[in-house]
Length: 151
Image (tube, rainbow, N blue to C red; front, side):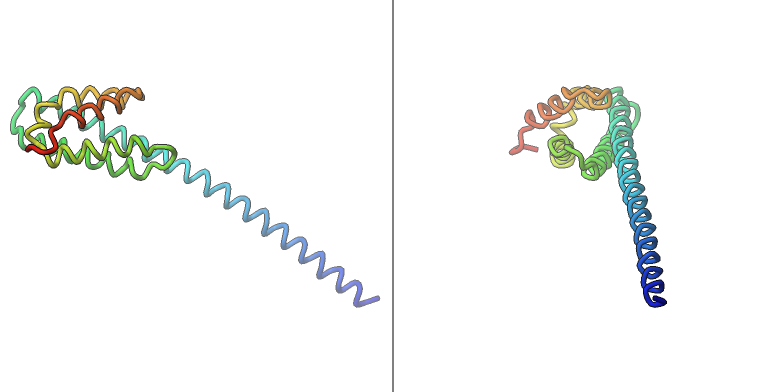
C-alpha cells in the first residue's frame, strides 16, 4: 500500500512536469513564429526603404546634381542592398527576387546602357514602393531592353 502511494505520487509528478514542459514548449514555439513574422516585416520594410533611396538617387542623377559617377555608384549600392533584403524575404517572393537581382546585375555589368534607362527604372521602383505589381513588370522590361552582348 505504501508503494502504491509512492508510485501514484511519482506518476502524478511526472504528468505535472510533462504538462508544464509541453506548455513551455508551445509558448516558445509561438514566440518563435511571432518573431519570425516580425523579422520578415522588417526585411520587407528595409527592402522598400532601399528602393526608395535608389529612386531618390536616380532623381539626383537625372538632374545632374554633382558627380554622376558617384551617384550611379550610390544607385548601384542601394539596389544591391535591396537585392540582399529581397533574398531574406521568404514568403512567395521568388519572382520579385529574380527581377531585382537582374536589375542589380544590369546596373553593375552595363552602366552605359542602364544610364539611359534610369527614368524607367525610377518609375518601376516608385511603383514597387507603392505596392503595385506592375513595378516588377516595368523593371523586367528595363532588364529585357538591355543589350546583354554590348557594354
